[in-house]
Length: 337
Image 1 (cartoon, rainbow, N blue to C red):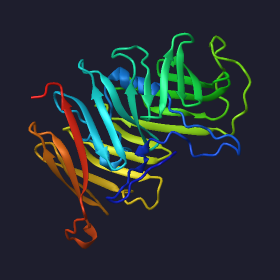
Image 2 (cartoon, rainbow, N blue to C red):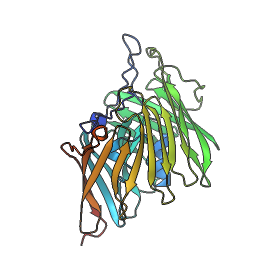
Image 3 (tube, rainbow, N blue to C red):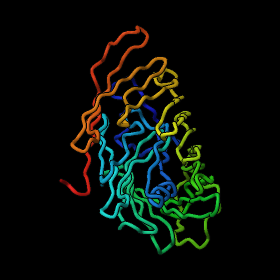
Image 4 (cartoon, helix red, strand yellow):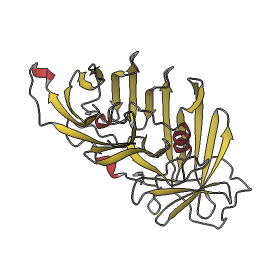
């Protein structure tokens, strides 16, 4: 599950097939399914924005998911698949990417825009469906034969959610510490475990079935934390995938990027500096073992729709470009001219 894939200018993004199973064994007979909590998705929908994080892959650099003015949708074609950011005619999010422990997921809203407790899917076709059930005041999360019930709780600076299997047995528990950032409370971490008994008492008033089921194996723990600067940019992420940090300039553009992923031989396990041109295009990423140059193709509105990445070997102090990788963006505007 804890996948981080940064290979030097080759196909370093294979996890975009949206894996939704944990790889940790939970005994010989039972394997804990990877479940993604509800609360972080609800916060994105409530705030109507996604924040770039320093643990995002290099192909999805900070400028990749900035919607140009007047645009309603943006799709990013990566080596492992396509991820999308979409808004409806009212400008509300209907699809967006999110990241957990190095795994990139596609979220799609299933409820009408403006719903208080929206239903959504994670993982694309064949992924998980999160449906709000007013009957018991929580979410039913399903995929093929799998079914879980989720109850939300907590208030103020700490939220929580408890997961139950289809028989009403505790399956997982998440807590979400919050911090005051730019005048608002934001989730700053995910703490929890799944695949075994939850660490909180089940809600006695929850209308979920209470039949007996087989016991699960050992729990899979989840620990993820992030820090913000005064402008609500995420400056640090610590998770099982590694430790990643970022520093932004006065223009709010990323200037320095440090990746300490879990792989010792990761070529991007280093300090990186970013350079931007007058148009606001990222033109270079430079590190001790890395020198990447970027070229762009722009559309008629001067928004980039194709980015080519060339690699330079700084060890030889010479320009030896490799075959360029290409990242394409398709942008749909609110009013096509």
